[in-house]
Amino acid sequence: MFKCLLNSNYDSWSYHRRILQKTISSPQFTKETVESTQALFREMEGLWKLIDNIDGDVKKIDFAGWLSQFTFENTLFSLTTLRAHNLINYYNAINPQNKVVVPEGTIPNSHSFIESSKMIFEGAHFFLLTPKILRNSPGISETRDHLLKNKAWTSNNLLKLISERRTQVENSNEKIDSNGLLTRFLTINTDKDINRNIADDKHTEKISDDDIKATIADLLLGGTFTTASMLSAIVYYLGHNPKEQKRMVQELDDVLGSDRDSNITLDQVNKLEYTDTVFKEATRLFPNIPVNIRANAEPSEIAGYRFLANTQFMIDIEAIHRSPDYWNDPDTFNPDRWTNNPDPKQFNNYYQFGGGVRVCPGKKMALAEVKTIVALLYRNYDIELVDKVSPLNYKYDVIKIVQELEIKIKPRN
Ligand code: HEM
Image (tube, rainbow, N blue to C red; front, side, top):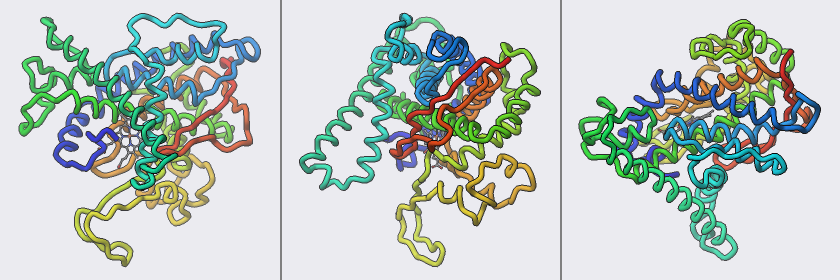
């Protein structure tokens, strides 16, 4: 979309990918994600407490709406150490009578960032599926221009943010010591390099603002709505499967202990085995990137058909996840299928995070974030779906973004 990681230039991709491997895929980053997620979750709970819509402690919230603000804020903070305070902006938008003051230091236009990011997926869908000749035709060219203008807006705002941080870094006389990815990128191959062998020997230049922007944009887009929609899918399937929900809550109590205010550690998160199978099962049924694309470097023969080199293949992940060839009773939500005598075929046929060299670099971060949120949510609240009949409400533009999921939350006794 911004052509840095999500591109087909091997040299540029592998260079940036290597850097990500040593940063966002590292154990340190995963540990920090558990910590930042908890801090932000407590901020979100503080805002939930202010909502007064049902009865005392019982609140009705649009989980999908809150969580896309949350994952945007959390990803932005992990990448840049900047705060968008999107949760407060969101609260203020839905509670105009009882607004909360937005703290100073918030990045400008932060509330528009998330809407604009969502529209970038619409743009990707549009440019992927609309032939050029149609894009230029009257009636459709307005949509094209609107989408391009939106992308330019995000691009310019990110560039501004990067150039401001670059000036700070270059003018600073103090030792720079930040794990934020943006600062790391800015110091690569400079005399202030804080990265210790993170770049390779081939690339000796500083990374340009444009390249940093492309990577940050890919990560921000890759990390926000995917993670939020995964969380909505988990809450939706648990809401429809109370027995499994009860079993998961029991595991949370066993692993996390009885103190509902205690901090959760990465170690504890890693011990949540049943919870992990719940995630796998919810995302098997609702893979929010339902189609992946690959091309063959050489001519190939597949299933008796011959294909020229550079043919694009669309992999229908959703069909694979629900195929009776690989899964028993594929449409049933059954977390136990992952642990009770699992059919070995199923492990090669689960693609929530893709696979091979291009497997999602944010997988560990996403799982740490999702597990921490689910643990805090179900440890501390009774959760109920408001509408137990309708299917999950999503929009599909390259990825499936859950639009709304109303739930009732009540602090647990
Ligand atoms: C539940 C959350 C997530 C899901 C379901 C998801 C899923 C995926 C999938 C299916 C791919 C394609 C992999 C392939 O082609 O084999 C991908 C790639 C990618 N993801 Fe994620 N992802 C998630 C979270 C994240 C997060 C948190 C980040 C970063 C902060 C991220 C950044 C990326 C990037 C940059 C790529 C492109 C990698 C490349 O082409 O080398 N994702 N993701």
